[in-house]
Structure formats: structure tokens, C-alpha cells
Image (tube, rainbow, N blue to C red; front, side):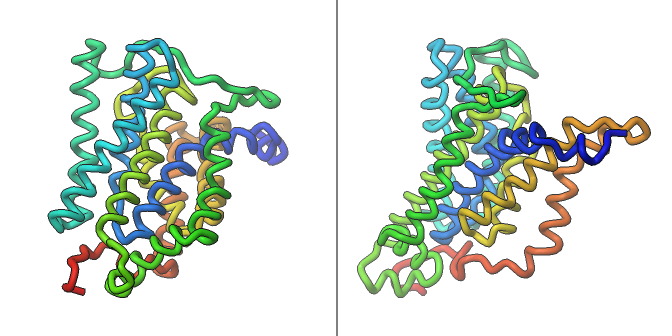
Length: 299
């Protein structure tokens, strides 16, 4: 059994940043959506499709940056489905997002067969540039995620655009009376969440790896939602929670305990997610109008 000192090492802490990267990006994306009043549990499906789109773009062009562009476009398309159906047509946001997750799972497997002729793992593609610190390799998207945390904080709490978004998530009718187009801003925020979740997927496939594996998001979209809730819909809080989950995943990957099955070790991040949600979901208060469709003159 590894000693505690070996487990809590500098390299393990640094590895936590790598594992936390997609969680940070997706949690920040979910924050844009939920602060505007739209629950986005489709982060899982958007992340998965973004991962596939990134590999497709890199494979078709030989340029991993085009893979990032593909991932962003894919994220916007999937988020656009959620925005259109739930905001324009007032459908139940949870049901629509669940459908998107299922659709993304099936569509990526189908597209794997169409474009690569495989059902499980795509061929290897050119990955994004990275920098190695000690013995840990960091994708450029890790730095993007770390930079976005203070940027998103500043946006939400120091700009009038952020105030506008927070107001429509808390009191959409009051915001409407001030001339704010509630549904337009919600639509924009959901699309932004798609961009960030698409980037999270790109990190999985061409940032931290160089291929797409079916179902490779592996529940990280839901873990990102848990990080957002645990962080009380605050960018810094979500970052801290994502780091906690990233540390749990780093431990699950690197710790080898002979008498414990590897499958049980691998479940650590998911068990931690359940514990966090069970302990904090009742204490964390979401935006007041979260999940409620808005119709002008109806609220």
C-alpha cells in the first residue's frame, strides 16, 4: 500500500489540475446557463459530442486547433437544440436535456462508424500542444480553464452584462420591465454553456488524449454539475469543487491497493459526487427562476 506521503505528492496535486480541466470548463458553462434560469444537464451529451467533433476536426484537417473549432461548433449546435426547444417552445428543460444526452451517446457511435469505420475507438489524431511541469503534462486547454475562472468571476460580478444575466435568473419579470429581453439572453447563455462544454470535450479527446473513445465523457458532465452546485453557482467555488473531484480522479488512477478491486478504486470520483450531492444539494440555493420557462407577461 502506498504511504500517505506518496499519495499526497506534488505530482498528484498537479495531475488534479489535468483531471479537473473538463470539469472546470463544463461547470463554468453550466453556470452561464443556470444563472440565466435554464437548467443544463445536457452538459454530459454536449461534452461527449464535443470530444468526437474535436477528433473529427483534427483528423480531417491535421490541425488540432481546427479540432477545437469543430468542438465549439458541435457544442453550439447541441446547446442550440436545448435552447430552442426549452426556451422558444417552453418544453421541460430536464426532459429535453436528458434526450440530448441519449442522442449524443447514440450519434457519436453512429458517426464513429461513418467517418472512421469503427465502433469503439477512433484512430489516433494530432493532439493539442502541451507543457510538462515535473512529470505531469498539461494541455493548453488546462491553462484556458484556469484563466477563465477569474474572467467568468469578473464577468458575472463586475460587469453590467453579468448583472443582467443574474437578474433574469432571479427575477425575470422584473428584468423584463427594465427592458431586458429575458429569452434572448437565456438563449445566448445556453449557447455559451455549449461552447465551454464543447471545449471540455475537446480536452478529453485531443488535449488529454489523441483519440475518441465511445462514452469517453463517462459522467463528467454530471460531475461538473455537482461541482457547480457544491460551489454554490460561483466560479471560484465551482473551481474548488472541480479540483476536489479532479484530485479524487487522480487518486483513483494512480493508487494501487492490492486487496481492493481496481473497479472500486475507479469509482472514487463518482462516490464522492453522490456524497457531495447528498450532503449539499439541499443547502445550496439555485437561482430563483432556474428551470422555469419565461413568457412575457406570464410571470
